[in-house]
Length: 114
Length: 287
Image (cartoon, rainbow over all chains, first blue to last red; front, side):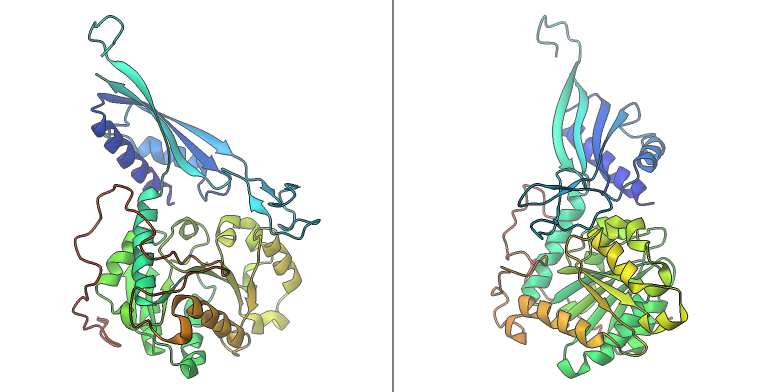
């Protein structure tokens, strides 16, 4: 249940940004959750709903964008499918996780400013 | 202010950040890593499920590493007890318990705080025994040179497939309790196969802390990493010399390569300090 500590870090970061820009309110957040980020998107959402009360994010909706984890060969770009051995069958290169598959990022905030 | 007509209405502004939620932890981890690299200490993050044999591996390591003369040390995380740290002390590894309470994982800040009252600089190999858990610890960088995941043969052949995030993060998997294989319906080939489907470059050592099988390979692996952190086996006379890491894929960053990203530096002490350490072996307080 590390989702709660992650949500805490998220809300603290949003608070800092809102302070910096002298925002009056936060209307929305968008967060990207990779399949291999180690975070369960539903749990993260639940944790956010609980944690946001009494914070600057109280009225801010959270949009989660899930990114599937896909792998490919760094040399020939051949996709390595889920469940396959993570080595390119042609080049024998270790597969590389494609961009975003393990992401856990705060992409953007909608701030209401004076 | 609404700039169109100057009516005084507020404005909705989208702010693009694209920033890792764990950026704060990553900063703290970089800082720990600097400390370890400067001091020539090989720091390892030892993870695995409860009962996988993390503590037993370390106990056996104390014995197996004795001829090398390495000074070992450990911090051991546990939700409620300091049992593991006591076991390690008994095995001759100066240890300190980190009681995490509700937290299911260690983060870089917790490790940093634990370093303040433990003589980790007097160690050659420093183990950070994480909370027994195959989920949460995987995503927190602690500043270690490498992640070691302990998986016992009693846990089921498909564990790597069920916990891909943990095994993807592993630089080495210690497949423990292999002395039990004759008594179990476990096919080790299936475990290796599962690991190859979640780790692009699986490195696995089959090991038994009880019989000592595989301990030699594990010590050799540690020695290889020690060469990277403290070349020549000696502690660097000048803490500012160290090897760069051209070919071994461990997380040892060149010294001072990071900027502090414009973020306030999290603590007030200077890097060359020594804390008045009085926590030698046995210095850990037992109630």
